[in-house]
Length: 247
Image 1 (tube, rainbow, N blue to C red):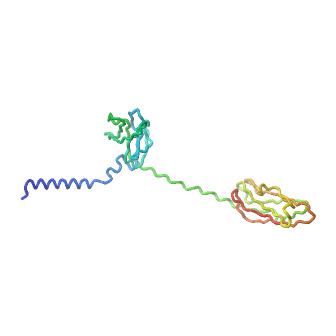
Image 2 (image 1 turned 30 degrees about the vertical axis):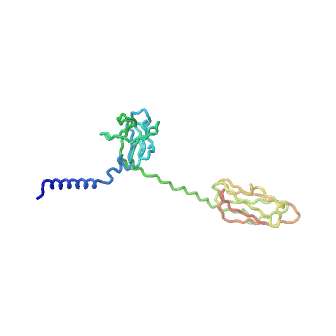
Image 3 (image 1 turned 90 degrees about the vertical axis):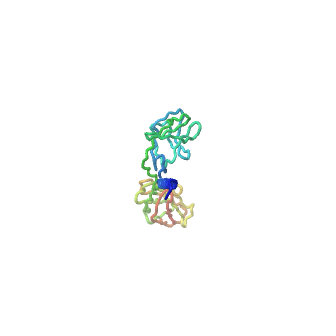
């Protein structure tokens, strides 16, 4: 037969076991977001303080809302802890009070009225995180067909010849075509070249052709014909292809 003292002891043990089981069965996330979350809108409802008080997070980092901004609000992610930073002293205080209307008040001094900065916390959907926009691809330069207006040019002594370079389609931008002119059997001081700037033939946007001139000095003996080389190139202001006219 169990004595009254034994029954009392067994009842105490059972009650203790029930209490332990109750504590262990509490959801682990019950206090995961004591200030609402995972995201929350914080609104400054009222303020009764002469000093500026900044709301801060658990790292004492300003959240971008202070008691001078009554009616203003911010949205923060994972608000695990909120306090106030007294602007003129740099002191951070964590004491707060939850009111019956769901608002939270903070205290900056010692009168314990907790109305120096009063906020309202509302759980909201977290805003999507911004991703870096895809870089804008660099437009590919239009391939331009470059050709000469003649297959063969003859230059006699004391005369000149104009060489016209055609571009198809019309240039959609300003282009420069570097041109190299060599004399073949003629020495470099036997002829002149005009119409090139810095060894380049320039076409403005929309132009379909441009020309340069080669003059042959009178030296008493004939000069051979010269033949321009043609082909397909991509012309741009950065990496122009080179055309070579050879004797």
